[in-house]
Image 1: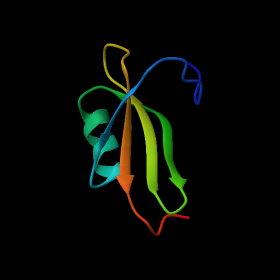
Image 2: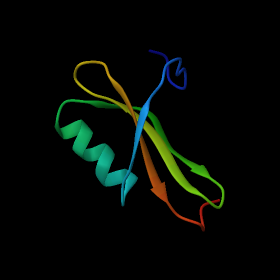
Image 3: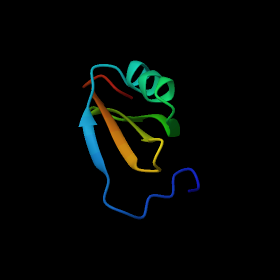
Length: 66
């Protein structure tokens, strides 16, 4: 999968910290596909992939995101 190329339905979970969640995915053998990206006034978003190739989204709420 190319970075930023999402062509399927993706489950997204809310997390308190994108950085900590990405680190947990990596420590379990997964990888970051799209780095932490701001969504202004909403929060931050990232994509990761687990060891079986499944894509998942991570969403951190932050109304001050720019």
